[in-house]
Image (cartoon, rainbow, N blue to C red; front, side):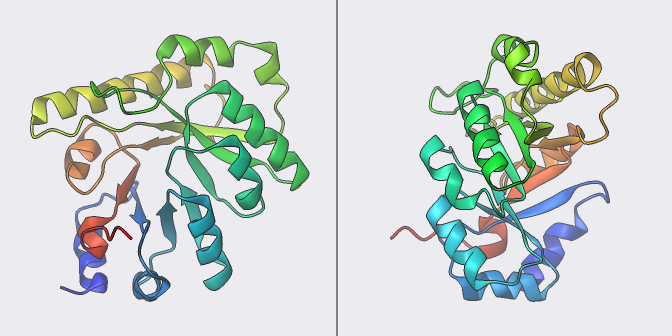
Length: 223
């Protein structure tokens, strides 16, 4: 099947309120353009340099989503154009994003990444860390970041019960945050969870944003 057909197939499974982020990391611009020509406008990358190069080469109506683990010294390269940073996993990182966003005269949208998996290799905040951050005076002073929701990655396993439980825990974090800190905030609305192998489960558990790569573009190329 072609990339265009793959996109149509994935979209046929998505409810209206769920946005498809086409995870295009390691894929050449030609493949992204096939998706673009099929109407796809949101792409996810996990390397700042690669995303910046693709931003330069491609149409400017694309939403670029940064979905990887972000280093503070790389933010400046994408601060002028990134649409959404999915993986804010520390207060230090959020403050650094705020600084670079201010220099670029922008407000950058971010998702708080929570550690929901049983794997130690995954990044993310604990509930206590998020709470401490959101209640701090320092957080209240950040004017160039906008918290739009949460993100998480489930354990890489075939155990659907475990995956569902982890997704449900992220939805629970979202609901608690909405009630306690973002009740009047219309921007706080997104739950980024679900990838090629588990996005249908994620949608059932409340996802509003799925990050799908291999189902659209084929297996990843490692160079």
